[in-house]
Length: 443
Image (cartoon, rainbow, N blue to C red; front, side, top):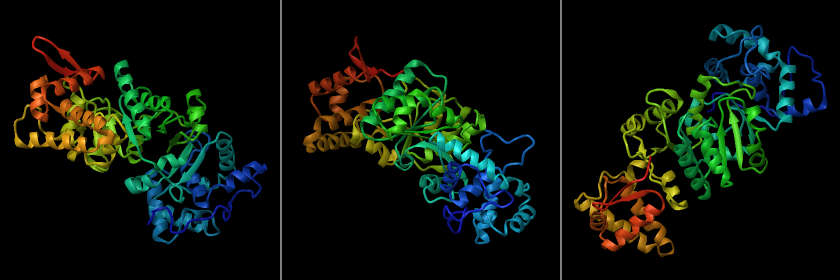
């Protein structure tokens, strides 16, 4: 049962206590009527309401932890947040303040006029808001985060995208242009294969991922740590937001400014909405990208987590690999992207600890099985063969030779040479001479 409520309050049964019943203009009343009573109560308790942060001389907002304690207490009493706006609100508030050591609740709950103004302001800008007590709150947050799911989510765009899953692409803010190009290309291919791209909207890798998917007219989910109100009016976001191809959301006030703590906490939401994640770049043992990836690997363990393949040692990515991350298999079509999402990465072909020059029976058997699988799927045989060969080659010890590949995959040397040439043309391998060999073209 949800910690926020035992029953859901309908959108018309609320009333304010301690404030005038007249809220002002008709638009304010209509906007307020679109919020459930539970959501109104949660906003009053936790949200700064247009200020972006708590007022210095205003009432003290409940932290997420304090709100969770309150929600659990209410559930234990067969109550919901909406009961704090009812006829027994004063008695309930007094009791929970004493038992849970909470700051005074009444000053927060008496901000009805400010809330009506905030809701009107958000509505005029196309911003919607849902609380954990609402039936349309993103299910993935509740299912994967449990009690630590944010009390409130603000957003703009098609909220249905929050339940569609997809590929999370995350990384550092300060990276080279080649990494940004790599990120955009992965996102573009993901979008072209029909899967949403999910990221954090920050400068660097996050933004490159969202732009890459957007350029392919794919579906994009941005989980922001700050400035939602400013993000939704950016030129590159207007058209996809209006056409239902993008949703931007945040657990923080739409006016909130950048905060390191918010950025760190936002990462778990990106992973919670995803079916798989790719860490393009990270700083070893510091920064939000590292913290979010480690948290997913060590604590939540809910989705496959991949790292970008690199030709040279990378301290952060190598450490994530040791913690359980897998090398990115470089999917090339819808089918191979579906494999990334649906399979345990530890069972995927590219993670088998076999080099192309491993002469074990298992290695040769895998090559034959992949080849037979490709040939049996005649409608897409070329694509599947390319996918299988690419996975094996890019996982193998470098440099590669044509003889080694032919032996491992049980094919002729000319066939092996053809595949290698194609991978060179795609920019995945480079051909060296004296002697002839093939090496990865990655940064």
